[in-house]
Length: 266
Image 1: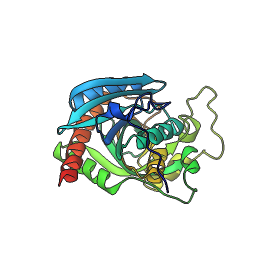
Image 2: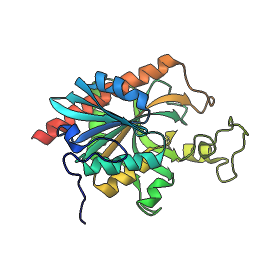
Image 3: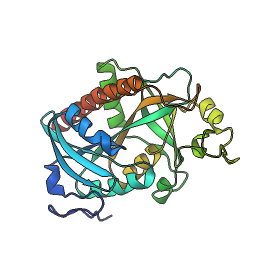
Image 4: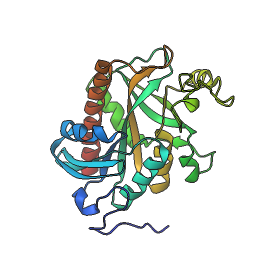
């Protein structure tokens, strides 16, 4: 299958930057929120620099273990994730780590902790444009292993398991605190089903990320900070728990990238 790489100075339509702007980076850190990009770039590495801001894609470059690393937002949901991945692949990105927030559905997981997702339930639509429904949404063993080792090294409270990726924040995640409170019958009772099957968390991007990356030949991993505990309510936790989870994520991602770069140099 022929691959269509961008030329060095070609500015790609959606992300708004070129391969030359990456300075040779092959690893990307992908938060959803554009507002998280600059703080992540500054805390993850050294010599952070702004690249571009176009649509939902804000991008910065930072340096970890002496190598450039892209930090680029994806926006919310699968479609914008896939668009980002398509253009990053054309510019030579070969490994990505999603950094997001999530709500746990398991009683033993607490706000402020982190979840490393090894796979995802495909409740999204985007992944079905890249692979049939029977195709699994799974993370890269290499990237996931690096995330787990980094979590151990920094003594972060982490959990490894399966996400449930929904295209919607309310009905697909069986939330009843929406404007109408209505959840279609197809989603009623599903949270209990996912709990009993051992899934750990709800979020909105991971299944699209894993399947699209597999289709594009990119290695992908995901680490999410727990900011809601669905077994206790629908709300988001206080800011201090959010910040705690973020600091664990930063340490984990930095350690994982250092490990991946070390392995690549052997």
